Image (cartoon, rainbow, N blue to C red):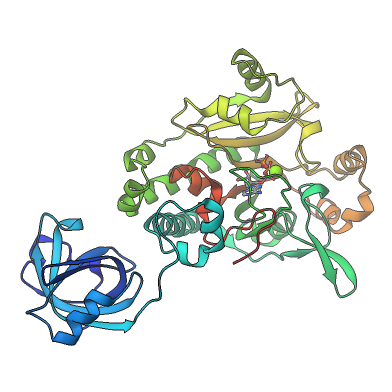
Length: 431
Ligand code: ATP
Ligand code: MG
C-alpha cells in the first residue's frame, strides 16, 4: 500500500479504512498508555492515537519519546473523532520513527528577528505553508491568463548594464572587471521582444536596494511583467483588471482552505470584478487633501497616501495620468495635457496599496530622447533601447505586478516578507 496524503483521509467515506501515512510530528502528548501524535504532511494534519496495547512495545516507547518535527511513518485504521483536529484520527497499528528530531528551536512567542534567523525551519509553519501554496496558485493563474491572451513567456536577463527604475535602488557588482547591475525590471527587454513576438511576459526576480524597512518592500521579489504591441492605455487598464480578477477567482476556488487559515474569506476574492474604479492623479490628490493628507500636486504618493485612498475600498483602484516629473522617461505623454503621462498604478484595497505599475510607452524617438535629457540622462546610454524606436516603432503598453505584493493583500499578511520563503531585506541575506 502506498503512502496516502493526509488530506485524502479526512472524509466520512474513509471511516474504518486502513491508512498509511508519513510526515513530521506537529504536536505530541501522552496520557494513560496512549500517545497522541499529530502528524503533518504537505496536505494537512492528522492525529494518530498510539495505544500501548496495539503496537509493539518499542514502537510505543518511540511514540512517547519522539520530539516535535521527528520524521515518522504510521499505519492504522481511520476513525471519526470529534475531539481530534480535522475530526478524524488514526488508531495506529504501527508507528515507525525514521529520524528522531533534536529539540526544535521554535516554540511559541518568539521574536520576529529570531524567527527570521531560523527561517529555514519556520517555513514549516502552517501559515507560511498556506501563503506559499497561495503564491504557487497566483503564479500558475498568471501564466494561464497570459496564455489565454496569446502571450509568449520569455526569459529576459537578470544581469544588466543599465537602470530601468532609477539609480538609487540599483545593486551593482563586478562583472568580469566591469560594473554591471541586477535587474530592477524586465521591461526594456520585453519591449525589445514585442517586435518579434508581439505579446510577451516574464516572471522573474527583480532586485531593488530598498534602503528603508517597510512592510511592502523586499530587496528581491518576483515580478510578473507583460508587454503588448499595439496596446493603448485603455487596453492596458482592461488587461490589468482582468488579470487581477482572474487570479483572485482562481485562488478563491483552488485555495479556499489556505485562505481561511490566513483569515481571508474566499468570497472577498470572488467579488473582485472589473471595471475597477479609476481616479486621475489630480483627483486622487484632492481626495487625499480632503482626507487630511498634506500631499501636494507633483508629489509621489507614499504608503500612507495609498492607505488613505484604499482603506475603505473592497475592489482594487486605478490611479492614472500622473505628472510626468514623478514618472519614468519611457511613459507616453498624455496627448491632451503634455505635463501628464499615460501611466497607472493599481492599488489593492483595504489599505494594502500599490500592486501594479504600468504605462503606455513613448514610441517616438525624438520625444524619448528629449525626456531622457530632461531627466539628466545621456541618450547614448540607451542606444540599444532607442533602436526600438528607429526600427518599426509601434504604440505599445506594459506593466509590472509584484507577486509578493499581490499575495500579501490576498492573504492579508501584515508584512510582505511572509509572501516569500526566504525574504531578502536590508541587512539580511541569511538563511
Ligand atoms: P513603490 O512606489 O511601492 O516602491 P514602485 O513605483 O517602485 O513601487 P514599480 O517600479 O512600478 O514600483 O514596480 C512595479 C511593481 O513591482 C510594483 O507595483 C510593486 O508591485 C512591485 N514592487 C516594486 N518594488 C518592490 C519591492 N521593493 N518589493 C516588492 N515588490 C515591489
Ligand atoms: Mg519603489
